[in-house]
Length: 357
Image (cartoon, rainbow, N blue to C red; front, side, top):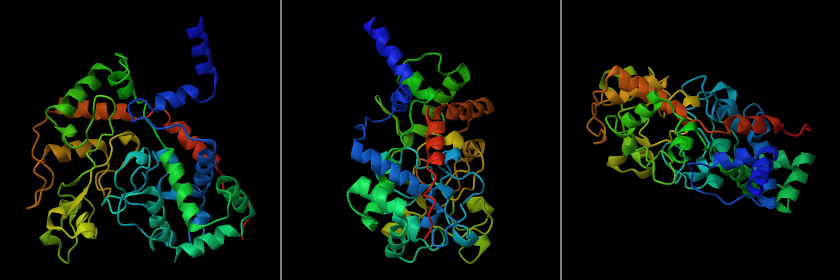
């Protein structure tokens, strides 16, 4: 009887069961305390508020669209302030709390620091400096009150970064059908095709060489940087730009990836291994958005990437057959988290305050 009552409470309490299932397959995280909850709510409002950009047109949620897996589906790369195309594809921020480094080149180690990158980028949100963002928010009564509730103090650059980081850390999404099958022992959560796709994933396709999974949880990344040949300049294109053979995006500017951070030759054209969680929602793929569908990604790896002198030694032809490819694509669709729709709904409900400067 006691167990039945517990089950009923879990079902009836709003969000309780979803919160539990959303953690399945991911490393455990401590529940947010009241102070942290208020900072998460503030960060959610900031994330969705275009007034954080210089001209009031671009929010974090403009490029990390909640309904698109907190990524951007419409174009290979996002659109920033004044219609500028940014250089790289917007990665999902779902499960970003677990990342050891941030951005495609890993140039930042904390979400507090990462939050200011887009705010200050000339082609993204276009702010001249942190002080201008603080000044804009400090005259909005609702934000002044919310910062005082969350921090016991007024608007500051540090607190803006802390609130945005707190919200992004709350975007935890596990409990996928794969998690229910692999970690929850729910034998019917995957069908036969999807199970075979997982065999291909760990076998012929060798995906788990970089997209790691363990006994207790799976982040589907090795946190490392690899040269796949995407974005490597093609001599035929001239002037340091890539051709379609190099990146899939004609005329795209050359992007040296991790090399731009470290200056080390071994890091040239190497990019961070992204998570595969929620990959069904986050097309297009690769750091430049050059592969439009997951099937294109599978075909790209099957042919051994784009050859170049520094190609990662893990990359080579896979010799997958058509059924292998179809099953691998089917398996990837099982990695969508249990709560992604709820997280998107919460983001949309966090309408920014109505007052204006």
